[in-house]
Length: 183
Image (cartoon, rainbow, N blue to C red; front, side):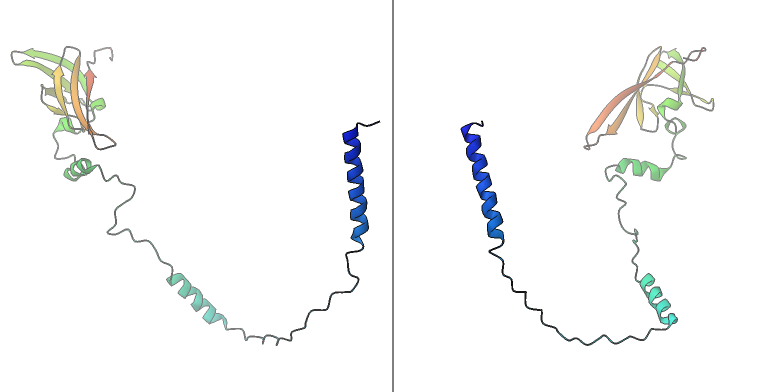
């Protein structure tokens, strides 16, 4: 035997099912729906087909109407508008720069130091084997770096960059002495 709440629920569900089946036949009317009104329309007239030549002219007009983008006089959206200094340097060209400013710091090799009464004199060599002497204050590298100090094992170069937010960033990098064994 089932518990009392389950018996009452199943009894209620059964009564509702019987009532819905019985009432299903009483609420519907047996009369058919009236037919819809017939509206008479005139049949469309057959159109005469145009000759092939005007269709080709229409295609040509469609092609002529296509608008193309003209970038003249507009700013290139893929070029940074912050790098004004780089554009000035590019306008000058590398031919007018001194030889030490034509190379990146990584392309130059530090091969020796000469100690003089005036201070240290660094010897730098480019990729072609040409030698140059640098002192403190000499401009070196494409980024406009300046030699800040020369030690027995390294030349330190201060470079100034413009950050992503427009702030100036000072970075000191070094060129290490290259020995006969490579490094």
